[in-house]
Amino acid sequence: MTYRSYSSGNKLVAVSVNEKTGIATVTMQRPPVNGLNYELLTELKSTLDELGSAKVKGAILTSSLKTIFSGGLDIMEMYQPKPDRAKAFWTALQDAWITLFSTPYPTVAAINGHSPAGGCLLSLSCEYRIMVNNYTIGLNETKLGIIAPFWFMSSMKNTIGNRESELALTSGTLYSTEEALKVGLIDEIAENKEDALAKSEKFFLRFKGINPMARAFTKDRLRGKIVQELLDRKQEDIDQFVFFVQQPAVQKGLEIYLQSLKKKQ
Image (cartoon, rainbow, N blue to C red; front, side, top):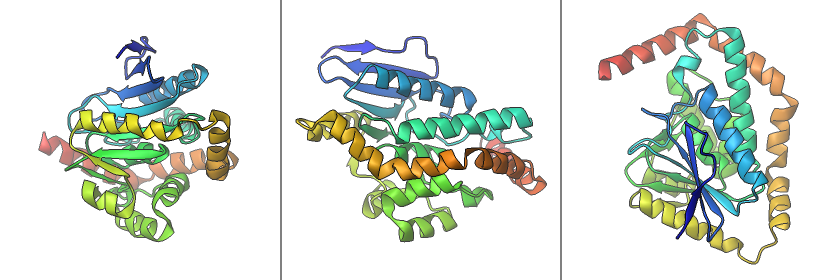
């Protein structure tokens, strides 16, 4: 089986394409937790765009880290931020989500570690989710005193429905792998990363014989309204984030969280 590196210039995102199947594996590689900062989000979006131009048959999103898929948004992008950087960061997050959520090619998240908050968002943005056992996943923003944006909520509702999303979002639930499967947050459980990648490859077989354009337009009809809502409210969403993140109570909460991380180290 032959693989080729597609975007050799990337430092935070590695890409290989299976020459036989046309499936790309997109690997986040920003230790220690794949924190989603401006640079990683920008690189992820550009990679997904390049894969679309190359007309790959599908893409698997995974992590180079042993126990973390993505720890979510980089706290340092929100702690004592400069307004211009905060705007750029949030715009990069919006653009990365829009691109991943609406790729014309099919996508799978091979979740090989813990996936809270923004990590969960990336997983929800893919069409199919395969998660290694004994990890956790969920939008747990409320536990940090943060409100998940409406498009985070829409991503979850698109996957597990309104009622389960309400229970999960208001309580900041982090599901175990088995719990996530039970509520439909993930689609399959894998024994390890290799198993998750193998199962991901099998997912794409269901589209054999399906017209790619018909498939892409159908996906757009199903997901387009969710994307359009953010496009219509993009600046409003940025302004709300910049205002909210600068509030003293939010900054205090982030400071306490950072202190707790230092104690763990």
